[in-house]
Length: 531
Image (cartoon, rainbow, N blue to C red; front, side):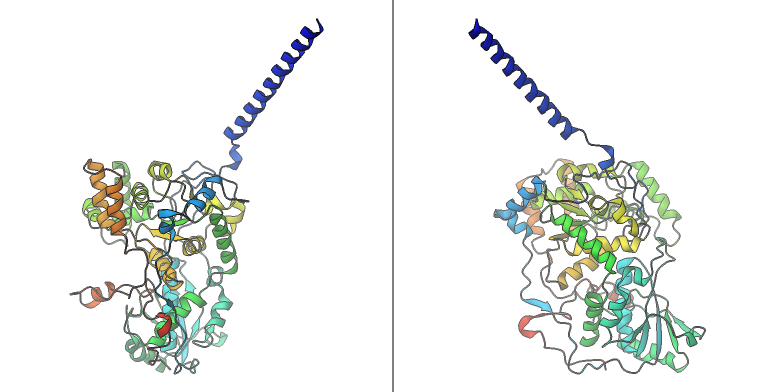
């Protein structure tokens, strides 16, 4: 009887143990399935006018981005750790490997004939127009112009009147004191006009686009005979890309890559975003230019619904300063003039060989159509991040409604990325590419849009399938489009006048050979100077 009693007790104990284990397992599963709504950060549903410049308001409304981890990332998620290990082996290692820089290093030191800034003949006021990267290039050009015409440069005024309506001043976006001190051996820079000249008559001038030294030394410097102040009404594309004295070209690079540093609060926030991206392993910065204003301006409607296409057409027709109203979207896309769609980006990255757990930072404003157009890319690459996802609302609050400052954060994360991929060759894409070239030819993959859309159309038509054949073709096409050193491209043969200058590769897209030299010849070809 006692043995029977112990047997029953033993059975009961086993049943209780099993029940407790089952309850614990159910509780564990419940914890992993149920997420409190307060831990989900979403993007706004209001589309900005333009990514680089528009106000990007934060909200908690549902969108294609959701928190995969808390904003403060103590350690990399499992998928990222696996990617980090995998990327050290085999073909994945080649994907992340930067192109050879062929011993090119920055060579921006002035020549022995270069002198400190000469006595100033007057003050140069500058209205920097455009978005962040358009203003950056214009400001650097105006530093060079101030040197050429012996002017004291007043800290430039940033664009506040354009459609992105950013109230930021120079010191809100850039480190003003660093800018002044860095250029003290090149140009006199002051924060404001002297009080005695505040009401003086100014010579307001629209400097001629893509002009050389002769134009500024003769036509513009002549204005000093009558005026103490010259005001440049616009700053973009006022200086030639090529055929300038080496010391002027090097000054442009010193201004762009050394003097024009972002404000400390932007630098700190940008570094934090980079660190949080790096916690996922090596990452791609994707400049996904699939925003409402871009599509409306370019007339690109591929993968859009008829209703969306009509909405974009109406925006283009009602925007008075956009001159071209009638655009054939099929022709536009076939010529490679359209940004890649999110779906096409997914196809492209897969063909190149990037695994699905690749961390991707989306450097963009709100994607047109949100979930409906991001779903294909998100399905292929779930680790899609952006600044609103990596940082808390409180951390981003100081930058909200300041489009240039938000764009600066994207710029920093893009510069520091392991790979940068622009889907369209706009101002930001060109600026980031040039800066990455200057910093050692960091890997930048430039999609051949014209060729890619033909291949993607074949997939849609059923005449080609995803797989090894497609992958091999796309890899081969982009073998020489990864940011390796090359000289800046000159004008397209046969072009004349303004079109000739417009067809040149921009100076800030590729500062080679002016500001990048082979180690053994870093100090050659520096004999010319502007005194």
